[in-house]
Image (cartoon, rainbow over all chains, first blue to last red; front, side, top):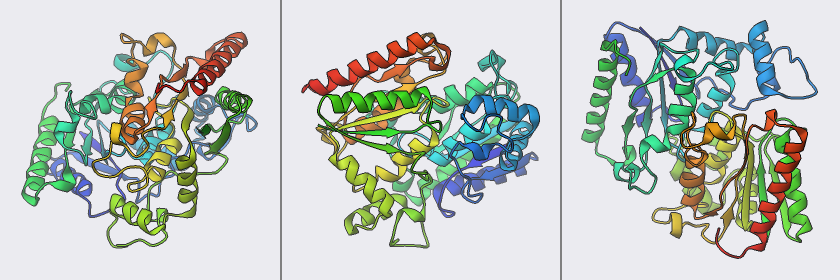
Length: 218
Length: 218
């Protein structure tokens, strides 16, 4: 198995970073391959634009999907996008790791989907969900929140975590064909004790290891 | 009434841009004030980071909410953020206008929320939803989609549009205190006839005008 983490947090000593480090050790200890895209370390620019393409087909009118299709056919995506796409294609398990900001991934991670998961490379007309181009691959999202678990319950003020994460889990990952495991959520990470943080990280390592050992679709 | 549009599309001749132009004329014709933040024209950087702050309090550890709180207290947000915050504070009606990419706003608009709707300025502990700092203001989202309305129905492949937009409508706008009107959605904008586009734009103008004429909370 090859695991690709997509990590997005501005602080190298954050709890979210510890989630990444634990994942790396768990994957390597289990004898699998581990790759990581560290978006802040890469200074990734999440803004979609002409810089996505080495040879725009119609520089007078920006039609994103058309340019993406042609860039995929011609191999003319910007080098940074081609590199990320190669690593996505090679990975069996995608693991986005991020803090929940305003009910979703930070803009940097959203823009990584906008730019990297491009038409032609990641999806085409008529191929989505079960027939998506990435069918056979799996995805496991790890997210840290400021709010407590109660706030993300069905009756909670924010709505259930499944509802909050729907655009990512369903409209992005499942749409692409990924079999999406139940997300790992570290609730109220900034407010819990050091011992509780250790427990969270241990349970995260177990979740990931169990998924790696399981051949079944999650 | 003062209306502030937050517009995010890379192509100046797009249908989404026509939605903005129609909004501008409708608001001005009704005798209200109109302001627009054009994120692509502004080359807005959506990545949260040290550049948000003129005088970071702890340059060795990036704690976003703490830095935001102190920047709000000290008036030390980066000038671009202070300018946007002033315009948000002045506006009675916020109108985000964008294409739906991967089930949500483009990264540029997500990052505008991450950076501009900052702790201290836009929210504080214990003030959310009905007691949010922007209670009394209204918000009306206008979104263009590639997918048809059927795909965004309760039984549709993407789930209802309310479910897809939940993080924006609920976790962001309602959380801040905005009274959120039913979103205007131009479904399948790239696939419909010129006549249908005209109809969509006319119905958008009527929606916006009716909201401006109504004093009731939407």
